[in-house]
Amino acid sequence: MSAKTHDVYAMLEKLISCQSITPDDDGCQDIISDFLRGFGFEIKTIEKSGVRNLIATYGSKRPRLAFVGHTDVVPIGEIDKWSSPPFKLHEENGVLFGRGTSDMKGSIASMLIAIEELLRLSKEINGSLMIILTSDEEGPAIHGIQSLVKDELKNTKIDFCLVGEPSCKENLGDTIKNGRRGSLSGSLEVRGIQGHIAYPQNARNPIHLFSPVLQKLINQEYDKGNEYFPPTSFQVSNISSGAGANNIIPGVLTMDFNFRYSTETNADKLKNTVVSILDNEGIDYSIKWSHSGEPYLSRNSELLDVCSRAVQKVTKKDAMISTDGGTSDGRFMAKICNDVIEFGLVNKSIHKINESTTLDNIVMLKDIYKQVLQDILTIKQS
Ligand SMILES: [Zn+2]
Image (cartoon, rainbow, N blue to C red; front, side):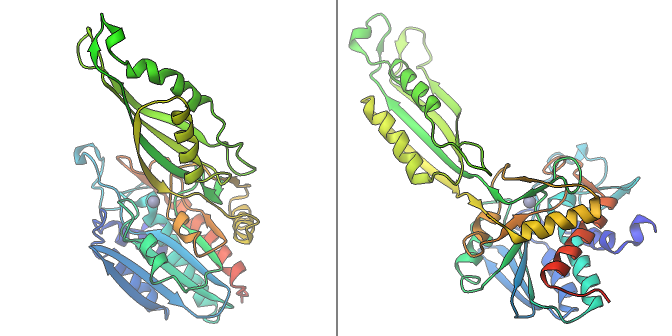
């Protein structure tokens, strides 16, 4: 069968043709809604401040499995550097190029065709299925899944949640995520007294005052991590001071830093530790915090077992279980569901020029998703 006649390819081709750069959905969710409506899904479209969200539901029984993802993509960057138009799926020797192929329209196309194949086997499923999509995952992510969880999904019992983000590193099936670290950033300002460098007795040098404190912040053990998470890490991303002349002691030092933190601590504990280190040194300072994501972890996840088995069956490989990488919408779903995992395509080319996946991978992913749906919703193959 040539690539172009494959169902997953055809679906992906349609999705890629939508120029859905955050938060503009550009008709992508309409294609998905029309497709799912054809199989009897109930469709709910929710617009929030220019963001398009879709909740599609099939059945009302438990267990309820939700597939969560996003139809938006990151900007294309310099178009001249693309070897083919980014919003036209282009195939070359089984490799499929286009913005969103891996992150994450390929995964959505695989899930849609998995559902189609499954409901052809049986319209009766022992449970229910939800497809939850947003056009704001790559952007501020405020009016997307976060908002649905607080509002439209607040009273919905979801037993299992599969986030279709590209979780794999090199090959399809090499990694499943069962959690993510939290992220807390701080902007610190340390104040000294500016003066002539020849008269240090009349000045207070914020660089000198702060350097031993920086060492303490770096050496501090914030936690030991656990089975699933490495120890929380403190990293400085930027530090600056100086008045621009070599005969001046500067009056201020500023530093930006970030914690990627495990489930062994929380944002308040981290803030308190930093503040107490600074207070103990008697430093004149102020900090602005920004908390961009809480961590989550699905312990003893049944969905993880089911997905690992499906990966084994289709790819003949054992998946590694990981919590690394940036934040994802899994953090929001974890507020209403105890069993959230992330599994999708290979993430090597995501957000890059010439983003790509392969036909083999989207077809295998479709088979893995189909197996997961079958196992969770106990549909017997006829
Ligand atoms: Zn993504």
